Length: 387
Image (cartoon, rainbow, N blue to C red):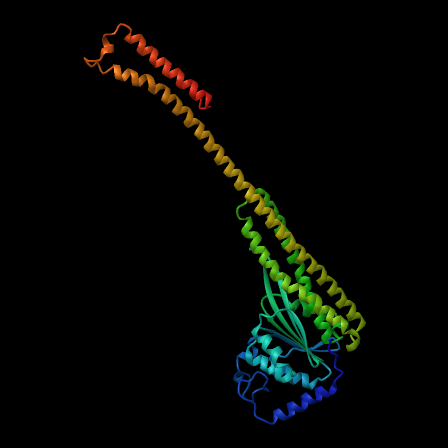
């Protein structure tokens, strides 16, 4: 953790740099330039486009809330014992370069804050900590997780937050800290704790929402809902993103705790950070459990789908078998009935040269022949289980 205002030489150096730069006419529309003599109307619109709020604090109490970055820089120089908390949302490149020049931010950290899409991490550049956090919130209507990205610069006398996304609500963090001046006067480290705590607390509704989704999915799976597989896949992808947001925080907080002694972190603040670390560990374990549960549900769903398909195939096979049996019966009776029809048809032609027509036993013989053929076919088909 950075030491709170224990390096006056660095501040004096910054002040001397400012005095040297003040002698040179600043370029027009620069975000960190002093007020234009022509008035506020001559300033570049981009200067205030992304500044959510910039506030100066002294001993945990709000002193000023400058409207622009240039005003914030000027007031901080007038009150070297104070702390600046600057909140930005999707800042312009000019604003980031102005902050980098004023607070000596490392170019790599500034580049990360400008590009976004970074993994959660904690980097130290001299007296400045650069922290990347992935916030999350649960959207009830679409039943999905919305992820945001937050970059935090923590120096000896300043905190800069660069937000990409709707989460987290840093205005609530600011109100909480201003309502607790005894905590806020601990300096930038306390602000970092409050931001970490807000991000981690924001995971709790997400965990609750995901738990409800998993319960619903289990019901859908055993009910045989065809959309269950798609929902399992989509939630599994969200859990991968959620895991990428929470798992690195465990190592980051343990890294902060390892530097408690080296950087002289306040004991009360140490307790708060350990509490955040416990919550992060718990959340990370829950997310791991969700991924395992979704994997098992997907396996169960695949098994149930296979069983359902096998049952349908078996039903089709049984229906086909029954149909074949009916066809056998129909074919057997058709063959039995065909034999007397054939004999009757032949003798019904009444040709003059048919010797049987004049035979005294011709009629009984024909009737007997038809009976013998029918009985023989019936016995044959019966033995073959066609009837």
